[in-house]
Length: 303
Image (cartoon, rainbow, N blue to C red; front, side, top):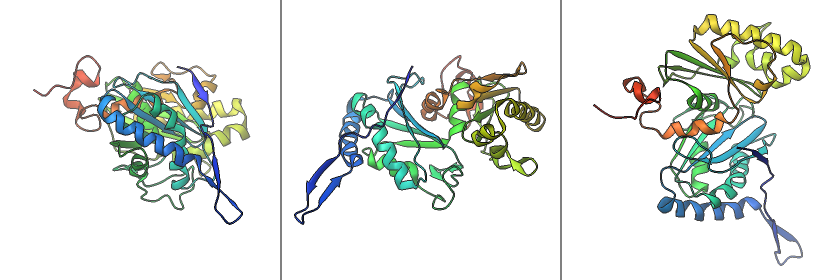
C-alpha cells in the first residue's frame, strides 16, 4: 500500500468579528466536526473490522484504516510531526490527519503507537517531544473524544510493530531504527513489560537513542552508523538472548551489513498493521494460554 504525503489541512474559513478584524476558524475544528459525524456513523455501519491505526513518530505522524487482520483498507497518510509539540498540538494534528480516512471508512475503534512509555493509555514519557508537559498525559482519551468517543487503545510504537511481525515462538525482540531507537520484547506471543532500553548507556555514556538514532546517523555517516547498529545487535543478543530479532523503523532500510540468521528487517508499515492486534482477545495478556492463536494457526478459543 503506497504512502501519501499530505498536509491534510483543508480549507480555512475566515469571517469578520465586527470590530474590523478577521478571525480564522482553524481547519482542525472543521476536521473534528466531520470526524465526529463519521465516527458516529461508523458505530452502526463500520463493524469491528475497521480500525483507525495511528503511528506517532518523532519525525512523522502516520495513519490508515485497517481490518482485524491488519490489512490496510485505505492508503497510509503521513504528515511531519510538529516541533516543538505539546499534547494539545499533537491531538490537533492527528485530528486533521485522520479526517479524510474517517470520512472514507468510518471506524469503530482506534489503535495508537506512541514513542515513549505508555501505561493504561496514558503517556508517561515522550523523549522525542521533550518530557516537559508530557508526564501522565491522557493522550488516547483526548484524541478519542475529538473523534466521537470511539474506544481506543495505545501502547509503545515498537510494541505495535512487534504485534504485526512476531511469530509467537520463544523470545522475540523488536528494535526500531527511526528518530530514536525503540524496543519491545515478546515471550511466546505475549507482550512483556516495557523497558526503555533506548535510554540505557551503550557507549561513552551515550544511550541507544544518541548512538544509533537518526541524528547520530546523520552526524556519523551511514558507514559508521551501520557499524554501530551491528555492535548493538551483538549487545542485545547477549542481553536478551532472543530467539528472533525483528528490525523496523524508517532507517532499517539503510542497513548494509549481513544480518545474522535470526535477525530480519520488517516493513515500516508494521507500525500501522500491528494496531489490529491491540483489539484481538487477550492480545496483551495471557496469550501463552492460546498458542494456536498467537502462532496464527488457529483462533482465540476458550477451552
